[in-house]
Image (cartoon, rainbow, N blue to C red; front, side):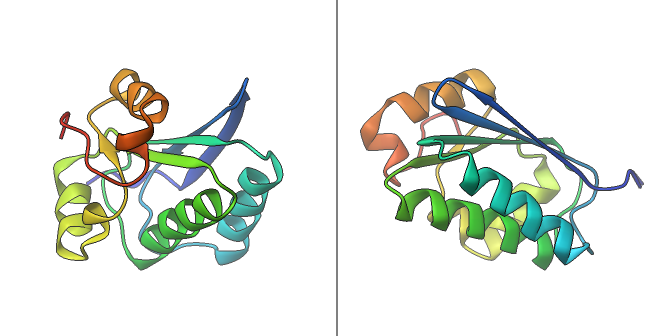
Length: 129
């Protein structure tokens, strides 16, 4: 089992925030997650791509983080896409119906295309599922 500590890196490139998550987002330091949400919101990015390719497991803290970032991005008129989901993470997001609301893409390249396509990033699903 992968037991890497949780790490969330936020980088901004032009109008896009790249959020790279790593490790198990199962139990979490809520102050850390809140600070990272604030960092993303403070960057005022109109497009947010969250890369979860290095996240082997997710729990309520991770789901809360995703939904919080998605909601604040959408409320400020922006677009959000979640990419690189591993099967276990995808299963949790399917069970909780989060994947029915938040745009998903297979990888960073297709996620960037989703962010550039207004219809896909507005909430309809990417064909790259």
